[in-house]
Length: 127
Figure 1 (cartoon, rainbow, N blue to C red):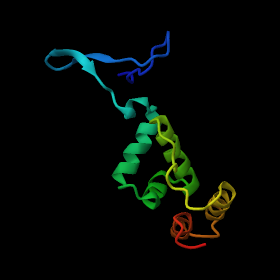
Figure 2 (figure 1 turned 60 degrees about the vertical axis):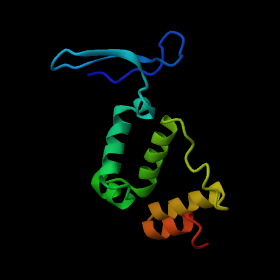
Figure 3 (figure 1 turned 180 degrees about the vertical axis):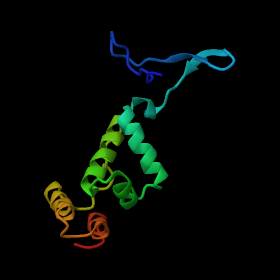
């Protein structure tokens, strides 16, 4: 099956789902249905979200399952958040400028600090 289109290829306006059909019994339902924010995600992003939910949002478990670094997991999560129409970290300004935040993530990526230490620092629990 193809993913649901959410944008008109001609005028770029939002598409509305107007018909649902059961492939088992051929029952059809017509109306106006909202696809939700997840409809905007790519297949790769949906697969990431499935792993993230299965791991209960615990980034260390996601790291282990996908064999990816903490910064890569955060970047993928931010891509998903943006694709859903939100801006990641918008309400989390804890006094860390972008340069300091990047430095913390670089230290984490280089193994100079643990994921737990990075989280504490990023959450403003230590400076």
